[in-house]
Amino acid sequence: MTTIEVVFTLFIAFSGGLAVGSGYVAFLTVLGILPRLAQISKTADKIVWYEAAIILGTMAGIYGGLRDPVLGISPYFLLIMGLAGGIFVGLIAGALAEVLNVIPILAKRLNIDGKIIVLLMAVVFGKIFGSLFQWLYFIRQ
Image 1 (cartoon, rainbow, N blue to C red):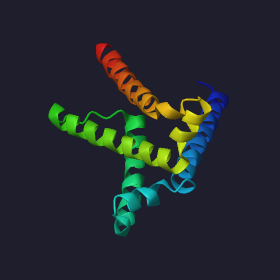
Image 2 (image 1 turned 135 degrees about the vertical axis):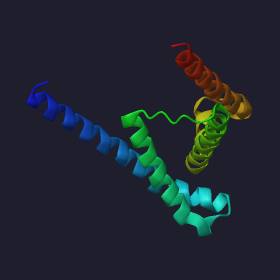
Image 3 (image 1 turned 45 degrees about the horizontal axis):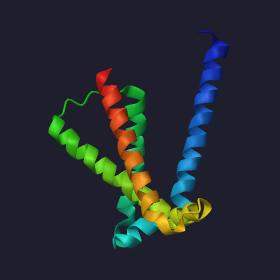
Image 4 (image 1 turned 120 degrees about the horizontal axis):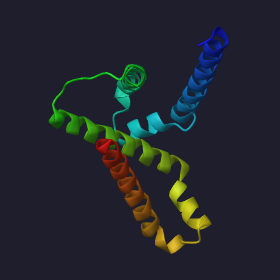
């Protein structure tokens, strides 16, 4: 790899990191996801712990993405970690949907005001089938 290719690759990686990081920070701050989640769960006095968890989780995700570590832990513990991760993603998605009032707006735009439950079930089953496809597809490889 030539020097210009290395510099170009570093520039692209740095630019991508800035774009993703800016979107992540905007998601958490501008939309007020964290304060709303703390308010709903009645744990506003522990907001510092939320912040520390987000920073440590981001750092662990970056490390895991770059190094592809092998943890060597029990599959049962991995099930618990997967469940906790799924709950977290669900909470964030629920908080985002509540903040933006996505579902009523989407139902109105699709002219299915009286059938919001159908829209919700489509989102739920889409997420389930998408996750199953991802897990089963990567397990077979």
